[in-house]
Length: 132
Image (cartoon, rainbow, N blue to C red; front, side):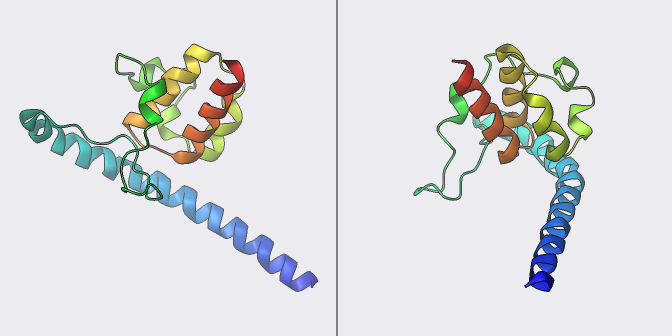
C-alpha cells in the first residue's frame, strides 16, 4: 500500500511538472498563431473564441466567459501581477486571493483573450462570485 501511495504521489507530481512545462512552452506558439490569424479574422468580421469548452454539448465557447470580460482589451503591462505572462498557473492562482474585484476582472479578461487557462479562470470566477 505504501509503495502504491508513493507511486501515486510521484505520478501526480510528475504530471504537474509536465503540465506546467507544456503550458509554458506552448503558450507562445498559441499567441503567435492567434496573432497571425487575427488579420484574416478581422477581414472576415470574425473573432477567435476566448475559451473552448470541450465538455459543452455543442463543443462551443463557454458562455460564462463573456460575463466578466472588460469592455476594453487588457494588455499585459496593466495587470496587477508582475510578469503575469511568464508565470505558470500554479504561481498565479495563489496570488489571486489578494486582488480586488477590478483587478480580478482585468486578469480574467486578459487570460480569456490570451491563454485561456481554466485553473486561473475558474479561480477568478470563484473569487468574483464571493465578492458579488
